[in-house]
Amino acid sequence: MSDKNKDASKGKKGKAGTYLTIGSTLFAAFSNVKKVRSARGEGDTLQLIDGLIRVAAVATGVALLVRELRQANDDDILTD
Image (cartoon, rainbow, N blue to C red; front, side):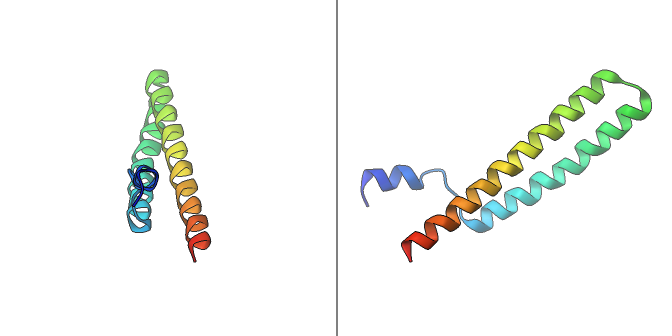
C-alpha cells in the first residue's frame, strides 16, 4: 500500500460505523430539540440560542456524514 493510499484511508470508518454515528447524532438531536422547546416555554433567550446552535451543529454533522457515505459509495463503484 502506498503512502498516498494510507493517508486517504486514515480516519475513514466503514459504512456500518458511519451509519452508527449518524444514528447517535440524530439521537442527540432529539435532546437538543427538547432543550429548545423547554427554553421557548420558559422564555429563556440564552438557552434558546444555545439550543438552536446545537441543533444547527447536529444538522451540519449529519450532512457531513451523509456526504461521506455518498463518497464511499462512489469509491466502491469505481473500484469494481
